[in-house]
Length: 173
Image (tube, rainbow, N blue to C red; front, side):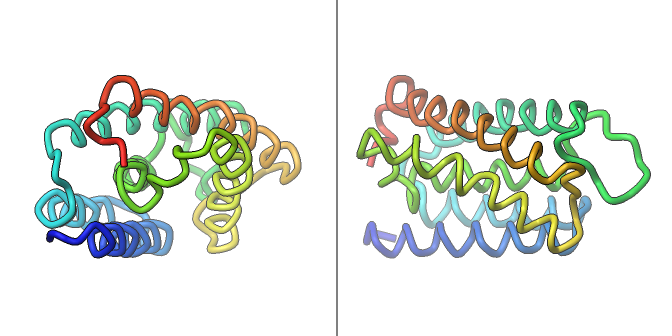
């Protein structure tokens, strides 16, 4: 794909399809679908495949650690009685798709200094809140969970943009 706008639209659509699949049908099947969506992304959207794959991996580790911390701290829970040792594969898959958006459809967020500081603590928790209303996760104490997530996103999102800007300069929009 040669058009930057078309690549951004496709990136946005792939993320939305993957996110929805993972929160409606959590499990290995939806994580497998995300792998297919990522292959499509790296084939049709990405121009810097190797660098972007590294960046996605970096973000998956950091995001997975944050979600795992939230599960262990009681900020986030699964509706099932299964004890969570680490963030489930479908949630890790969402992180992988989300990381692609930072290089494409959400690349604009890092272009103004205030965007990540304002948007992250609202948009990040909103995604988990939305997933909780679809019944896939639970926020045991809504206020505490949303505040903790806002703080986590306030720290992690600008860090991810900083990493993209300093370590993966070829991915800057």
